[in-house]
Image (cartoon, rainbow, N blue to C red):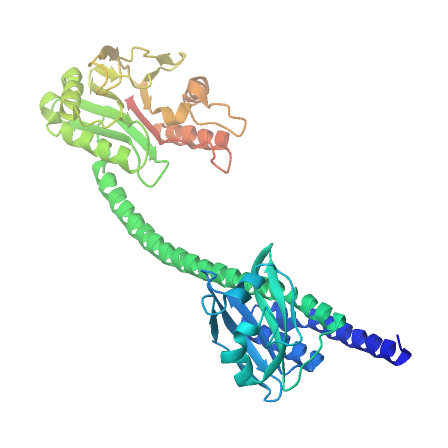
Amino acid sequence: MLPNTIQTKEETLRRFNRELMSLAKNPILDKGDLIPALHVLTESISRALDCERCSIWFYSETKTSIQCLDLFILSENSHNSGMELFQKDYPRYFEVLKDERLIVADDAIHDNSTKEFAPNYLLPLNILSMLDAPILMDGKLLGIICNEHVGKRHSWTLEEQTFVGSLSDMIPRIFQAVERKKAEEELKKANERLEYTVRTRTRIILSQKEELEHQIKMAKKIQGALLPATLPKSDYLDLQYLYEPMMEIGGDFVDFLYDEENHILGFFICDVSGHGVSAALLASMVKMSYSNWRSFIQNPEYGIALIYESLAGKFAGHFITAILGTLNVKTGEGRMTNAGHCPPVLLSKGKKPYVFYQTGALLTDLIPLKLETVPFHLDRGDRLVLYTDGIIEAFNPNRELFSEERLLSNLDSSENEPLDELCQKVFSEVNRFMGVAHEGFSDDLTLLALERK
């Protein structure tokens, strides 16, 4: 081999390598914009090979044709696309493409692989030499890079063949970038749709929340109106109660009725299972079920039975505990009917608290009515305390319950305190026991206390 020929080949290799390095670093190929990337590639190949025409073709979905995505014409410095060649018109060429190898046609008009193009393509365009390189991605043939010399035949060197083959490997990189950009755009659109949906849903939820809060406030006012507005006034009686729902509204309920003429006090406390709106609704139904209380104020058994019969079939999975009592505040004689409620506590000066443990069965559709009625007597200065289980079941950060024992201890130590201060002390002790976070506040808190004077 002549020295000049060796030098020329080395220069060609260096030129091709520089071009390959330049393309490898070109950011346009990785932007995901197909046409600009193909333009860069066809221009680079055409100028590096000093080849008049360089084009990139891809198979149709049916593999029965190839479509031109970009054609660069060097002398015109222009790009075209859109041409399509069909297998039925060029069966030999399509058959050779299946071999996935270079088609090197120095004499394209007479080469067995390309001569089918002579009448309608090569001769009209004066194309005399062709070099086609397959484009493969994931082992599948996607298309070809086609290089065409015009006006004179060209013998394609091994270096040119290697160069074009190397550049065909860049096409998958371009398409991967296109697919990546497409996926990113789809993800962006999906995120935008999601954000829009979230914003829309958030607006709806906030609107519904505001409406719900408004309705709950209205329900709280209604429930508050069902509670006793004033305390009965009597020379023989002092009565106090405190009520703190876990939520805005709750299922605990207290009521009392005083017959001044006969000095008869009717008192009532109940606890609907659960808390919140459903419990509050059922508590309201309880209130409506004994609207004629005055007619049976001295018959607590009848009152509880009336409540049970009125709510039969309407408990909706809830249950109710309740105590209905009557007391002649002048004589101190009284009776209480208990339907599964926390046992009342009798406080007598100088004595330990006495607990009425006869509690009966709770009110529900699931079990028959079973009540416990007990008589009691209050001497002057004696107190009767009724409460709901939210007090004794409150728990502290160590998950310890406040318990009946702690309640009795607090009541016992408050013997000389006024009745209203006794109620406040119990609530304060429960809150102190739970801690400032009130994480143990898991139910409504209610306390009803009466003292015979």
